[in-house]
Amino acid sequence: MRKAFRLAPLDTWFFRDGTPFPSDAATQLDVGGPFPPAPTAVAGAVRAAIALLNGWSGSGDWGPRFYEVLGNGPENLGQLDLTGPIILHDQNGCPRPLWPAPRHLAICDAQPKRAGASQKPERDPGQPVGFYMPGRRLTCDFGERRFPELILQEHSPPTEDRPKPISDEWWLPTPVLAKVLEGHLPGPEAFVHRDQLWREEPRIGIQRCNQTRRVEQGALYATRHARLREGVRLGVIVDGIPESWKLPCQEDPGNPKGSFVSPFGGESRAAAWEPWDGFDQDLQIRMPIEKVCHTGRFLLIALTPLCLPHEVFIGNVPWEELAGAEVICAFAERPVRIGGWDSIRFMPVPLRNYLAPGTVLYCQVPKDRLGELRNVLEQKGATQNRPFKVGDRKNAGFGLVALGVWKEVLEEESKL
Image (cartoon, rainbow, N blue to C red; front, side):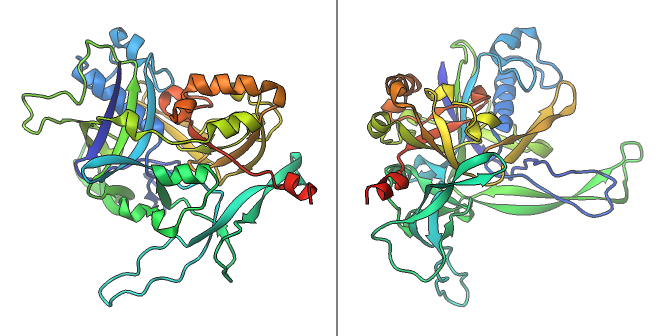
């Protein structure tokens, strides 16, 4: 059974990153994590909520009867297959997904808009002027590799500012992302800043001694929570739930609001579960699949963190999952480090590197495998305009991607 949920905060949410958090540190540390949270945090909340509704006590191992469906431990998710988390922003009462802006977009800074004395200047992403595309080969630590070069669009407005890649603060609605996948520049008004979706809220906490029930000297800590704006939710799609099992979004006669509430994230924060109706239509992203299958050339945009073998990422090994595609260039920021917490063994999960959402990979499939590429994309649902998952740990929600086209600039130059 396939179900989709929307998670709404009751107050704020707190998610840890890889920052050390020692209780005996000499300096005050400000600990927080990126938002949206890592897929592992959402997967843990989904499994715990389903287990609670179907007989788990809420502490310790949930028992062998749950192993087949929910798995056992942070790495084994049983038969569940999750997609998300996805930022949902209500528009006229309907949830609409927002996607991380692809990092290969080049913008020029805009002057802050003047506002009244009591108003802050509005945020402006700047003017999009072009894309970063694979350029000439340069020698680096990995040998000869192609590096991104800025290609200005022919009709870009003139500017004296130096273009730069767009930051991870910006998000795009689905129709705008579809235009970017076709190679068209969006207007500045199409972007949504993260401040319109959530804001960071600093918190100060205290540590009590369990024996004395008092606060010891210097036992303070600082954290950064995420407070979502009105109408913002987290969406997640779950496959593999048995038909007979109770679900978090089912009506509860004992709850007048009809929403199931369960722990989510650190500090035992809470989330209310709501049904996400019409999610199949909401996730439709028009992708230029015919052009991709004809040329074998595509750019791949990570919509959630992507777990990809290093040798594939640097182009040393063909990407067999995508018909032997070669990653010939990449536009990526520093990797995000994601770990987690093993509640069974009561210990942290080791940190691992993942490609950050918004990362762009430029790929080329050999001509003799174009038919195989089409078959792969049909099996993954890309030909039905559905984003799909690639890489490792797909069942936990990692590796949701969309495909677009890119122009081979060197070929065009050789024709001149």
